[in-house]
Image 1 (cartoon, rainbow over the protein chains, first blue to last red):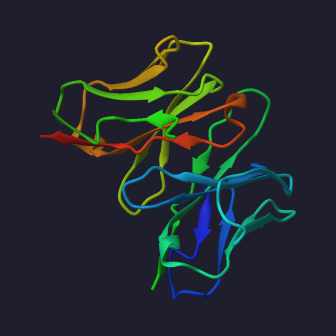
Image 2: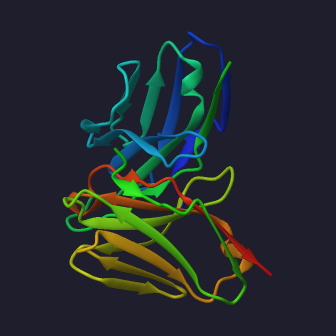
Length: 114
Length: 113
């Protein structure tokens, strides 16, 4: 079974540009979450989507936006890139069935802003 | 404010011995706790979880203990193997894991042969 996939693997951008990161969840998973991990820290929650609706948003500026498509894949968009946006961006999916649910992570997209 | 804390940035143990990784949390609304393992250049890999209605969960060499009154959980790895060397993250969530995960900063475990 394929796990969570993310593209691209690596990305280099310059300040002021925008970027789009993509994620495909595990087959059958309807919930997708995005996290940002900077060096030396744990992942920080950015967004969660379920059935194409935003379920939660972390403490990130409006430059960050996301959406989920009918096939449950998702995009994370970041506008007006800053040097501080350099990080590993992680996507996670979960089954979101009633009860307890683990989130499974993809390999991440390493974004470098110069 | 850091709601999930892993106070030991690193831990070194000998192969075959027990590894104990600790995690504290402050938010009493958390009801689901997870441990993830992360190798460099990879995403976190789910290891084991525990709900707040339990105080212990075991999966092979991995056992997680939850002390709700102390708001403390720990991950025991027995016996430790060199392949266990990685960064371990503790994470917490409300609503049975259906909402966002709040992560600690991680503990780097090194298992020496």
